[in-house]
Image 1 (cartoon, rainbow, N blue to C red):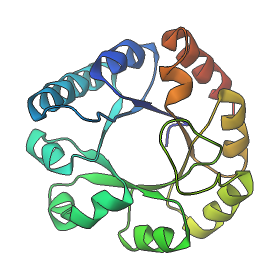
Image 2 (cartoon, rainbow, N blue to C red; image 1 turned 180 degrees about the vertical axis):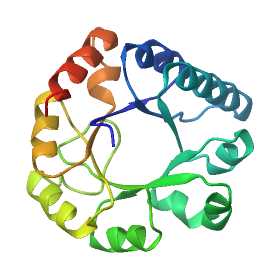
Image 3 (cartoon, helix red, strand yellow; image 1 turned 90 degrees about the horizontal axis):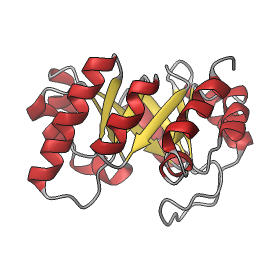
Image 4 (cartoon, one colour; image 1 turned 60 degrees about the vertical axis):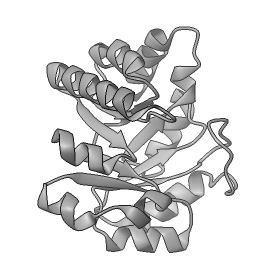
Length: 198
């Protein structure tokens, strides 16, 4: 699994950053009209295909099926409504969010392509009912998930990402550290350079 897991809120940003060498990217569009979401997803799919990157669509598993995408990410609430049988039949892989022991057990029972653990550090992305998990929890989760890849998310910077990868995470997911940077392009290049030799 790629060490850098970029999460972008728009197709615009994805189209700016994937050409820099990002190979794993999630499109996480919030509060968009269905038509706009569809257009952004198609643009993201085309950009990723052109640059040899893996696109993961957040939440919208039905749209992923409709558009022939091969990877989705689902949070715990999304899992309640998702048709995992339909996803499996279509060959769509899925990553699942986890925050506590019960959620981890539930996720692993569904044989995901990866599990995400977060927030590892304090995050400004959204209000969380969970306290920061810390690097020790990353180490514990990795011992529990076995061969299933582990994605660490929440409050990561390039330096913190090195720490979570050393603790056993297979991939470090980043949202705000890049999205809110003065130059998302320059920050993405910093991330790629920092993680290249980890």
